[in-house]
Length: 352
Image 1 (tube, rainbow, N blue to C red):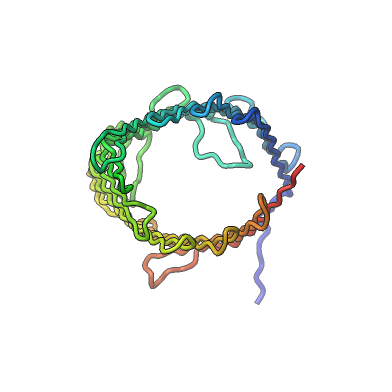
Image 2: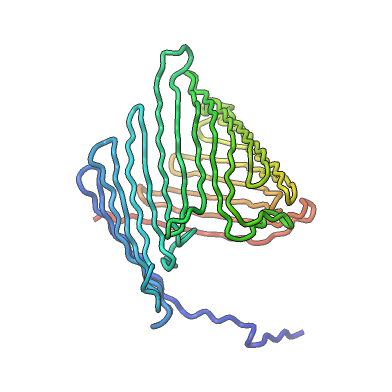
């Protein structure tokens, strides 16, 4: 039997050249400057180029100042095709604070790379205070406030995710307890289908979560953590739970098991989600390791497996072998393979 394919069904991909060049130079003991150039060339009128410069300045041990500027070039795009960012931070024994700012314009297009969102400005302030009171059994208290704010480039607020740690404490035996409130804001410009046939209408939504988290000493043979969150969610209500346990019988083997659950009730409908995760790390020697990650998500009906083998055969030189396998799972009995991939990466360091 002969199968014929019409020419209209064929996809022809032109030959393409790819280039990535990166230079970096240290300045003094703690600072550096760098530059990058990337290029994708498939023809005289089909290309994408990106240039950028960056700096990381540390005037003293506790303080860092950084920033970058980058611009892309495509045929016909010569406006709003840049991005920049700046950050400043301080890390002392009691106080830590930082502020990050990012501005990504609508036509910035780094094709030899990865970009989550464009046409936005991002502000990320954070402050943390860790006093050490004279309380029996308590090593230190912890108070923190942070926020992640996105606006459009004209300043219109799009989303805000914040956390205020009302109380955190670490015991002398390394147990950690935290209680926090999480103010949020979301502006939906169009209907948001959060689940099949469950749609949140466009509009502005202010809502608050409350969170409680507890973690045991992670250096023990058996350790664990649990997290509970409850509160408003858009125009409804959400309760979330997470529990995890870690086994570390030796420095060469670690197994982590985690379960996450969401119970969401909206005027448009109610639903639950569960995510199950399993991680296993094996260190065969200081230079050879094997990591495996398995996950099942019942909301998306997807199960995935990722296994990575790493051999550091000399300082600065690595061999990576990665295997990925994804299944669609309407139920476990009818799981089917959706895609697989085997990736081999080899790096070699040249000293000049």
